[in-house]
Length: 121
Image (cartoon, rainbow, N blue to C red; front, side, top):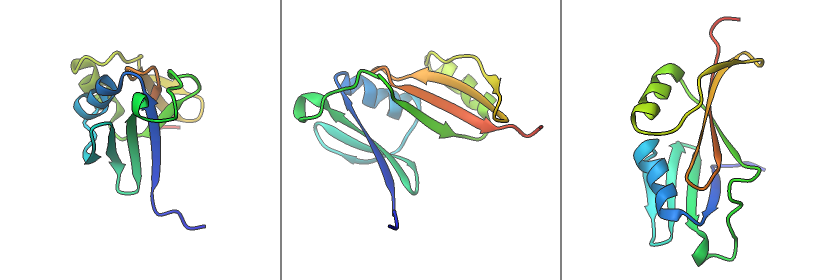
């Protein structure tokens, strides 16, 4: 199997708020948009889509059991930027797997993990 791209789809009750969170607060670029579904770019091979559960047969998990883990660069800068944009974020902490990490939750309750590999061992 050769995978060309990866796309996660979140089915949401709070569709408009969740779309605004990922586009306006996190700054993810829009790839496709329909009246109940958007596809956002994480990078050139990864996508995040958000669907309005009222228009689908799949319902929201209400954030239960979902973590979207994003490896980033410049974690302290991103943390400050998100806090300034009004996103409720945890403090940046050192994690045992040689990384710095912080968390936020989208309006649907999904946990978003931001992490950066530590430069010092």
